Image (cartoon, rainbow, N blue to C red; front, side):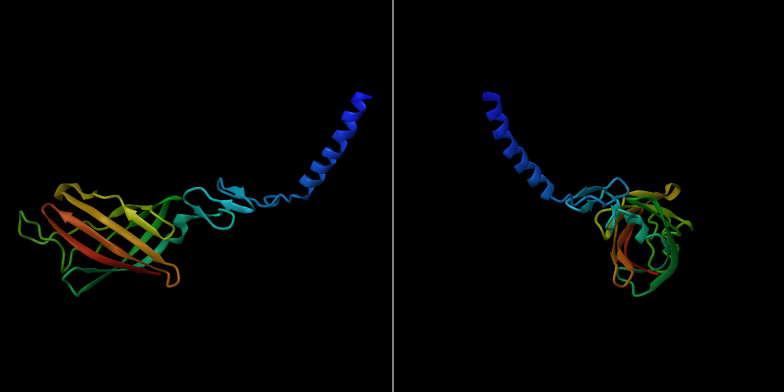
Length: 187
């Protein structure tokens, strides 16, 4: 009899919790997160470098492809035009081909040893990393030309998704001289 009372008390408690848990909807059923994303309350939480409703898009994909670049140097009204191509190294990083091929014309840094304008090698490649959803930066002090001690410093860019443009600034150091430029990329 004693055991029967326990079972009788247990049955309503069991039924209560069974009904309660059956009313709670699993918001993640049917949600398929990609690229290692995890569903939280019906929404995919994406790992670093991925975005989209289901983490299906690599961050770098919005920057990849061909761009028309325009550089203008501080204290110089001339605009320098060239084309760059951007590839994804991975979800969080970009490889920019043909970096500043026109930097060797009016406004370039002066080589303090020779007193001549420095001419950058053509086809330079630089690596950029994601800093936020719409921004990237280039590793400070990327060596561009070891023979002439040329470094890329402090380059960052921001994408304007409405106008599909990227803009920012960078500084290039040649031995003891440096030049800062503003850049703009358009598709």
